[in-house]
Image (cartoon, rainbow, N blue to C red; front, side):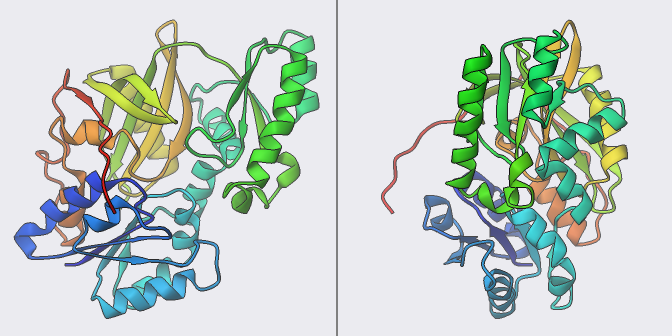
Length: 335
């Protein structure tokens, strides 16, 4: 078995986790990205791809898979997911299993307005959100919403274009700033679907931050939920966390699995108000919090490999030890 990881970015740890998972099979991990990164160099082989939204992208990947006898493809980046989901059958036709959720699932996760509507529909707590600046201002004037509020891209990731406004003047200025940041970054691609409604105004919840990872098998059956408390963040990614047991978070995980029907792993951020948890966003991929689950005993890369071989879920790979404290580091490297 050979695996291709696309849009690897800086996730060298995932490249190495998959290399370890394939060792018993003498398989190789190939990596792809549009610019050269250290994570690429950790793979057995790598390639530089066209931009994700270019017309050549999928054809390039298909040709690369054929030449290198790739049998499994996994993306590590949100923008990649809808393109791969729509072309899943093309890869299947050449014998490549793309581990990605269905297009409608990716749409719900990538579009944070649809995420909000989905969570409300399924009675899962989430911060109150508006897609209209005028409606948000009216709600603020009527005290249905109170300052501070969060302004963020509807199609966003990491910490790009996220700001907190403490009054109307700041809200109006930052709203325009977010629009400019969307149009000048790679967020413009997905946002072009509705650029005039590409910004959300959201209730600000000040609390401890939590993360859950909801694991389904490749037939979308619920397996488990990994829970953790986030202790430090950097540029929208978890920098330090401790694994925990929490029944309320686990219930949310099972509800998300049932309602969404994703494949493999779903990453989600949560906030807490008076003992009740609010889901902030959904990411249908490995997220920045996965290393903390892996260091606590999980091995989802190995489990995915087993699933692709037709093997059953292994409890050893889908369990974590509570109270495991872990932290990321910054390692300068020469490319």
